[in-house]
Length: 40
Length: 491
Image (tube, rainbow over all chains, first blue to last red; front, side, top):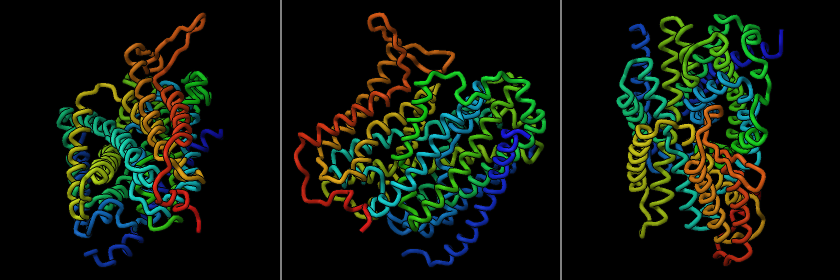
């Protein structure tokens, strides 16, 4: 399998899996952030 | 498109507006609204940085280069940006955070005073107007949904303005998380399906000329150098600066930018490859429409709607962030220092919201007026780099008392020389169909020099540096405020 093929599928994996992972990380953070009382 | 696809797109837009409203209830003063109170954590930073910085200019522009020229765009245009981002993360971000700034012109003001602040703010404002994204959203809505271009432009800008006015940077950033995920996931899935349908990477090598796979492509060396120099814009990028100031810690910025580089590299490569795939299968479309045509062809119902929502998300995540920057340039960086009595926090918030609306109106006007935005984008980026890079780098890294004249002279010289090169290439040059840009051929003796409009920074940066030197030598000393490098270095 050529380097270009490997790199391409790696890039697809990063985009799909990586972005979902970051979004999941954000949800955990958001739960913590929104438990903070609003600024007055 | 199927009704399911339309419903998905409508749901996305309503969801984004609802999120903006929810956030607006948590907003206190200007700092809360403009830099989210300095509370942005790593995952939010990743999402907002990646989705803000990448808009339809990348989605359509990079795929256009892939369609016409192959991999050269990724190797010589995109890769220098990754290096510049890492340089910004390691050398700039920590210093910027120590200085307690709120914007890019703030740094210029602290180092050189009001004059340089105004010049950098004007350059930042011109750069920040999201003309390409607004124009792109109009084109997408016209091509995909049949919405007349003017209405598409107005609708796209209006939705972005509404939630930005409500929730400021926090609304921008939180909607960016959804938009980021949509952008990346739909693009990745579309790429997998498109490659599968076209026979994969091996089929590209059979169908396309060898030059498509050459890292240098067929571009002249000077143009490749200019592509690389363009990456310097990252070092004075207003949206980057705003997010650096909005982060909850330096470590969050560092990690977010490192993760961002990986995602940006993947995004660029896939977009380039999709452009090449469209060329390989012989799609008879305009180069900038290649990616859209290819993905709409291969995606099934439902995924098609999601992808279009992802494309709209790509545009809106850029529009909202840069309207906020441009609005802040008008109120915080231009009006506030020039007003007789500085506006209070509530007034500043109100003025910035007005600034956002003004910026949106100017952006819409440009998007409806200009037919070709590629030159406009190169001009905007050149103006920013030419006027801001030298004074800002000097402010952050030079360990000597800075003269106000140095900042003012360097920012003005850079701005004027860049503008002059563009003016000359547009007045005396000709549009070159092969390279898609304006080139001015100048004959000196027996030799002819081709000056591309992209060469503006090659003239403007040396002029800016020279003017800085002269200003430092001949200018008067500043007052008693601490030099910026002292504010930003480690204690």
